[in-house]
Amino acid sequence: MQIIELDRILAAIDRDAIVAALENGFRSYSAGKVQLSPVGYLDLGGGGDCHIKAALADAEPFFAAKFVNGVPANRARGLPVQDGVVILSNAETGAIEAILHDRGELTELRTALAGVAAARLIAKPGSRILGVVGTGGQAQRQAEAVADALGIARADVLIAGRRPEAARALAETIGGAATSIEDLCARADIIVTATSSREILIARNWVRPGSRIVAVGADAPGKRELDPAILASATVIVDSVDQCVDHGETGWAVRAGLIDPAAVRELGLLLGTPQDFGDGETVVVDLTGIAVQDLAIAKAVWTAIRERAA
Amino acid sequence: MQIIELDRILAAIDRDAIVAALENGFRSYSAGKVQLSPVGYLDLGGGGDCHIKAALADAEPFFAAKFVNGVPANRARGLPVQDGVVILSNAETGAIEAILHDRGELTELRTALAGVAAARLIAKPGSRILGVVGTGGQAQRQAEAVADALGIARADVLIAGRRPEAARALAETIGGAATSIEDLCARADIIVTATSSREILIARNWVRPGSRIVAVGADAPGKRELDPAILASATVIVDSVDQCVDHGETGWAVRAGLIDPAAVRELGLLLGTPQDFGDGETVVVDLTGIAVQDLAIAKAVWTAIRERAA
Image (cartoon, rainbow over all chains, first blue to last red; front, side):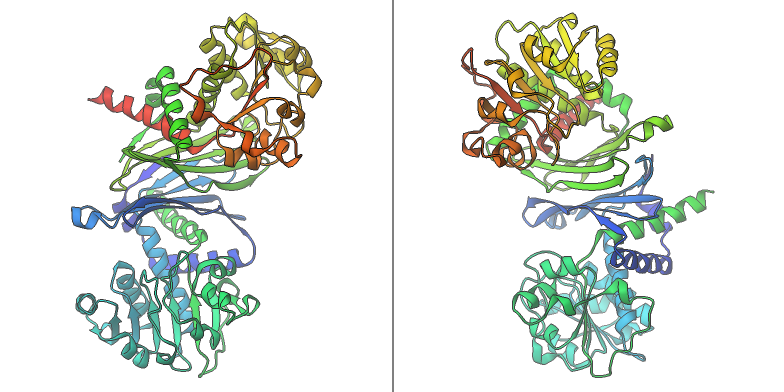
C-alpha cells in the first residue's frame, strides 16, 4: 500500500488524459457497467460535512473509494477547507494499492473537467464568450478549464455572482470581466453555473433561445441555480438520470411537472458522437457528480505515477 | 496525517479498554448522540465485497470512516482475505489525523468484543459452558474472547457448525470440544452464533427456556441463524433497533409477525445497569454491527498509540 501525497498527485496531472478518462467513465456508467456504492454523508455542523463515494467498473483493474471532509469555518482559522483521500483497491484481490492523499483536490478537478467534457459536447462552434456564474474555487476552475478547452480568451470570460465584489475579485484573478447574472446570460455563448445556491439564480426570461448551459452547482438535495422553466424548453442532458431526477436541476423540473424523466438524455450515451443541436436549441447539462468520475481521475493519476516510477 | 500499520495497531490493543469504549459507544448511540453515514457497499463478485461505514459522535474529538474489502477467493491464492483502513478525522477541522491500516482486523475485533459486552450483560452467574456455533475466524475470536471474559475454561467451550470437520479443527485449535448444534444448545449455558448462514441453524425446540444467545452472524440482508420462533419467546436485545428490524435476526421475526419492534430493547440503554433476567427467561442479543463500534475501537487504539508516542 502506497501513500501518495498531494505534490506527487499534482505533478502527475495531465488534464487531457483526465478529460478522456472522465468521458470513458461516463460512457461506462451509462452503459450499465459501473457499480456505485450508496453515497455516505456525515454532517459536521456549521456547514461542514464528510462525503463518501465509491465506484467499481467492469474490466477496470481497481476500484475507488473517496472520502472528503469540507469545513468552511477553516477559512477563518487559516486552515485548509478540505482534507480527503482516494483509496484505490485491486478489483480482483481487494488489496489496497494506493491511498491518494489529495485533500479533496481530485474532486474539485474532476468536477471542473466534467464541465469541460459537457461544454465541449454542447458548445456552438465559434463560441467566443464564456459566462461563469459563481465566485468560489470551483467557479474559478470551471472558468479556466472551460475557457482553455474551448479556446476562449481569458478576457472574454464573464464572471457574475450573488456578491458583486467577489465576482470582481475572481474576474481580476483570471483576467476576465465582472458583470450581473442577467447581463452574463444576455452575452455569453456558453454559461457554466458553479455556486452552492439553494435559490434560483437564473430567471427564465434571461436565457436566450439557443443558450448552452452547464449547471454544476446542484450536487445535493436542496441546491438549485436555474429556473426549472428553463429546462422545460431545453434539451436536458444529465450525468446520471437516477441522481439528477433525485436532486439535480432536473429534479426540480421533474417535481414541478415541467419535464418527463424519460426525455432526459445521459451524457455517457452522447459523448464521442458529434451532436447536431439546432441553432435555436437551448441545451442544459445537469452535473451532480458521480463516483465513476472519482474512479476515472484516480486511475489516470495513479497510472501516471506508476509510469513515472517504472 | 499519520499512517499506522498493523503491527503498531496490534501492539496498542488493550481488550478491556476496547470493551469499555464499545460499551460507551453503544450508550452514546442509543442516547441519540451518534450520527451514522448510510452504509456503503460494492459487490466485488465471487462473494467478495467492499463495506464502508462512518460514524460521528457528539463530544468526540474525531470521527471515523472505515473501509474493508473482503475477498474469500484470496484463500486459494494464498493471499490475505481482507484489506482495509480506518480513517480518523478531526471532528472540528475535518483534517485527517490518522489512517489505521488495520486490514479489517479492527472490524473483526470490535465484533468479537461486542459479543463480550453482550455476553457479560446476559450470562447467568456461574455460567460454565460456552457454545459457539460457527467455525471461521470470527467464531474463533468469539470463543476465545467470550470464554476469557466469563472465566470459562477453554476445555468447556463447545464448537458446532455446518461442517463437522471444521468444528473439530476449531475445537482443537482452541482446546475445546466439537459437537452437534443440537447437543451444543442442550448443554451450553451461553451460546454465541457467528456464521455467515442464510438458513436457520438453530431450531426452536433445541433451545431450552432460560437460554442466553448472542447472535452475531446476521449482519446483512438475507443472513440468519435462529428460528424466529426463538425470538418470539425471548427477551430481545439489539445493537440498533433500526438496523436489526431491517436485517438482523429481529428482522426475520418482525416480518413473520412474531415480535413487535416496540418490544425490542437496545443494548446501549441496558449496559452499565445490572439486569435482573429471570432464570427461565430466554434472552437473545442480536448484533448486526454499527459504525459507532468502529469509531470506539479506532479511538481506543489511536489514543493508546498517541500515549505511547508521548
